[in-house]
Length: 75
Image 1 (spheres, one colour):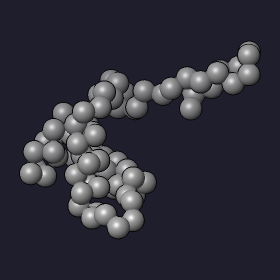
Image 2 (image 1 turned 90 degrees about the horizontal axis):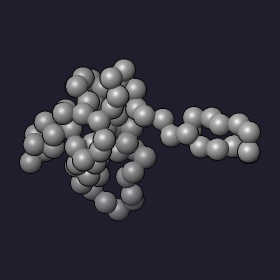
Image 3 (image 1 turned 45 degrees about the horizontal axis):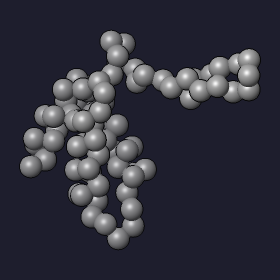
Image 4 (image 1 turned 60 degrees about the horizontal axis):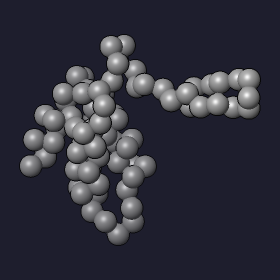
């Protein structure tokens, strides 16, 4: 059920409004044509439930990638 997915996702994203915003953005990016939007939304919530939690500042952990040999930037 979707309520189970939502409560599972809320363990990592504590603000419900923020969860809705993130889920809608992710659903738009991951949606494939000729599939049900509900299935994509459920998949997104399931991914939120299984991902690494956010850090203490409620900002996602940024990946550091090497650009060139001397400079590093956050992706």
